[in-house]
Image (cartoon, rainbow, N blue to C red; front, side):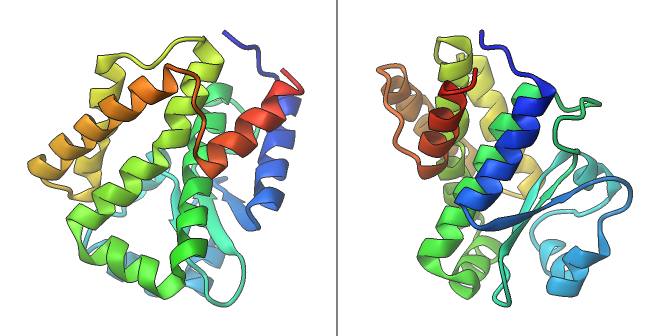
Length: 203
């Protein structure tokens, strides 16, 4: 197991924000007004697909397409501060969100938002691909691939995104397959490559 420190994790957040040209918004209390200023209909749109309430915002990060500037990544923690989210989970989950930023860059803000919000199957697909760097970082951090229990838990988080049982089952099969690739030492996701490359030089 690798050893992370507060300062490394703080610097990691800064690196990933610059690398993927995103703005990080940390949760220090209520959801920051800045999120609603950039995407006034966020809650309306999200409520069609996920239930955005205090419980959700306490536990889930959100990547928000922003046609007027940098993609926003809302994080329910402050970098390097351990309350309910460990340093390792901050590293892992930020990479997940940065992979969403890559998806947005490739597809465009409007297309990504419409596809993600409009189709549970597409939403599950976006999420499963954003889980790739999580599996890569897990292998880097622990020196072994994620367990079947971990993979199942990751897939079942999609229930909170109103994905159905079929989409969750497909996601779990996808993660099992990709986990086998990761176990051979492969790191193919953009966010995973950036995160592990940076961390390897410092941890």
